Amino acid sequence: MQNVKRLVAAVLLLMLMLSLAWAAPQPVEKKATKDRSAQPITVKSDQLQAYNEAKQAVFTGRVVARQDDVTIYSDRLEVYYGESDDEVDKIIASGNVRILQTNRVGTGGHAVYESKLGKITLTENPRVSQDTDTVTGKVIIYYLDEERSEVQSGDNARVEAVIHPKSGSTPKKSDKKHDANKQ
Image (cartoon, rainbow, N blue to C red):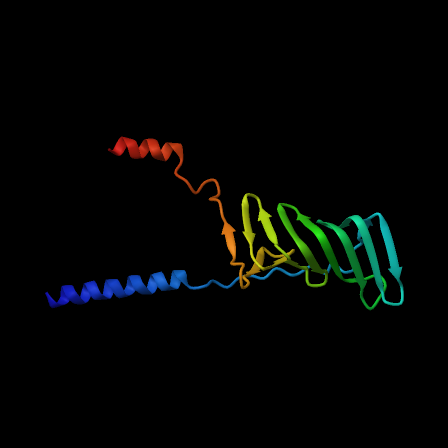
């Protein structure tokens, strides 16, 4: 009887250790961030004001900016150039901001795009959708070249995510028939 208790305890301990090892965070291979700062940007707007000494350009009115696979729509767009004139350091979009990248759409009242980091920070009622999933919060940061984002809550704005199961996560019709035949 004593051996049976020890065997049961050993099996339970082994199962616990295996479940903890399985649940432990796995190392994530970090994708290299593309430096988009030297890639061309096409901007269309109703008006442009350029400030060469300040290395800044301000576009206003129905602004559409495209760089690689990213498109930014806004009422106003400020472009800040880097140390050399052929680099864009950051872009600040304000008013009715909408950012598209493949199957991701980000919206908000204000956005800062840091091209060297491949990072967009959305504020003022930010929302990001990917396929049918959505997330909202006080601040949303998403990384263009990585499959990750950060969402922060605020005093009166908790993080909310709506995640829909992907196809293949529900039983197949053939599985349901098989289960019905078992009964």
